[in-house]
View 1 (cartoon, rainbow, N blue to C red):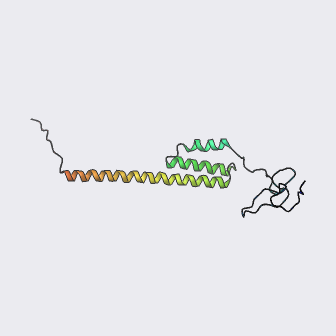
View 2: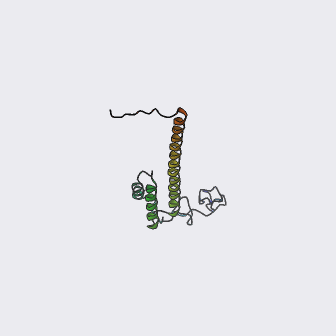
View 3: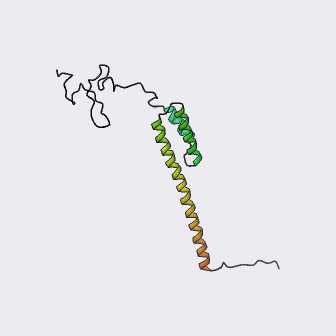
Length: 142
């Protein structure tokens, strides 16, 4: 049987944690964990791993997310969940970024609709001028 203290970084007896730099941890795996050392073994999470109730609450409070008010309600729900420590800060940041992007899309869509309406009105006005005055009909009592 291979020596668990061997200096091989590929050894199955070494921790499988990989640092952000790409280097693998060199510590021996913990007796309670087959993949990680005592340092990198799973720590109790401070937040629930999956809170379906929170997801449903945020979706329900958000509505269709097609108006600024819907986005506001969604962001308020994210704030409440973060303050109650039901949502980690990183996830709250991502959700707020997405909500902000949706808010920009709503504004851009409204601006696009406004420009299209103004263009159609200007085109109709140009057609009226080009075709001359409308034919007037007088209905006078006899």
